[in-house]
Length: 372
Image (cartoon, rainbow, N blue to C red; front, side, top):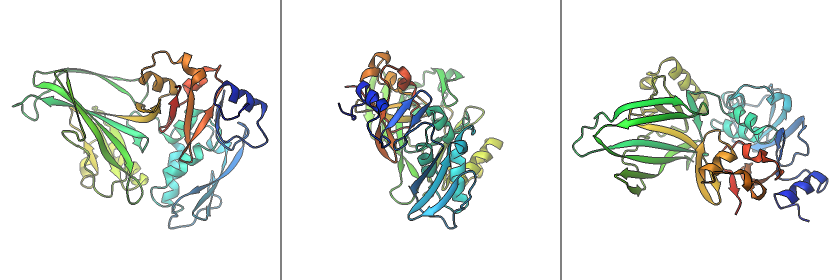
């Protein structure tokens, strides 16, 4: 009997014990997702080493609430369950990027540090997600796991560029703080619409990311035309831009704001919270104020049966299966294989195939789901 198969056999052998070493897989238990290399969900303390570029100052050996030390080409962090339990949404992200401000690690390395910490401790998947994501309807942080969907109208020939495109619109809150539902009725000047997709890709040089178009689809009178570039690329940023965040102003205006470091991005966000027009005071090509008739939604990308599928931020395995066309995911559970990134590499998730809990696993991007 093999311990490699993810399913009833693997789970049964796992529970009986394949050996004395902790499994090199994730294990989904009723109250926690146990990461590779951890033997028990009751783990109280763990020390991990993360390869990161060094900052300009030393790391505090008593950097409360977690101890951080320099080690070779990275840092050594001692994490306890008490450090993470009960913390507010976004707390770990703020703590990790704060290590940049202190000079412990180089600018732009904080997010990697936070992600390695949260994936290394046994945590409920929703709790883990919230530690790295502030629960806010006003903004969403973007990273390589994200895709941006931008919808814009296509006007008839001769229509003024600023022609009215909507006769009516109804906006309501979606299922999560990250979703908005929009119902619209267009004017006669609108002949179709374009949906463009963008990726958040690592920069070729230096830290951080860049916004790059993937493709665009024009829909005009039932005809779909796909091209590599959108008709209008709104996302032109200064070379220093490396970190990005969507910001939703009170009047439903959408802003994509950028900064060279996460700390500066936080300062810009605070300025936008106080004054929705603060974008005009930032350096040129720092933030983009989208036209009122253009919509933008952030998604995360996962792979289902070898095909990339876009789902909303904070979605579960169940949502991904539905997005892939499976209207009733429950019967698929015994055949599911799920792989989740650990230290940048996919690792299998072992789960009880008789329990539908795997469908509630929160996705963070990069997961691989299959059953064929």
